[in-house]
Length: 102
Image (cartoon, rainbow, N blue to C red; front, side, top):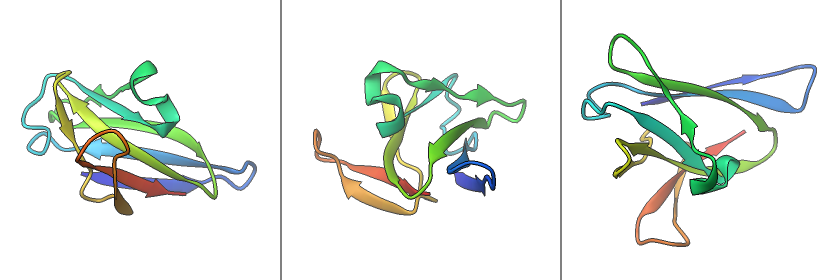
């Protein structure tokens, strides 16, 4: 898993690219990016599956904030990103959320 950040000079925005490799995704057929920036379950982001089996998605996030997120694999398995900036307890479950700071 990896997170790449690209700060824009012209806007208070950071382009954040989230990536899960095929092995970490446990060869899932689909992956969704879910978090604060998608209102969690209301608007998940479909991640693009690459030929390698990896999944990727780029999101514009407002700078000077932190965002909780997780990956949803095949609509049933939740996964954290081990390259996240931090992990914090979820307010609705006993698991941690991944955190990205921009």
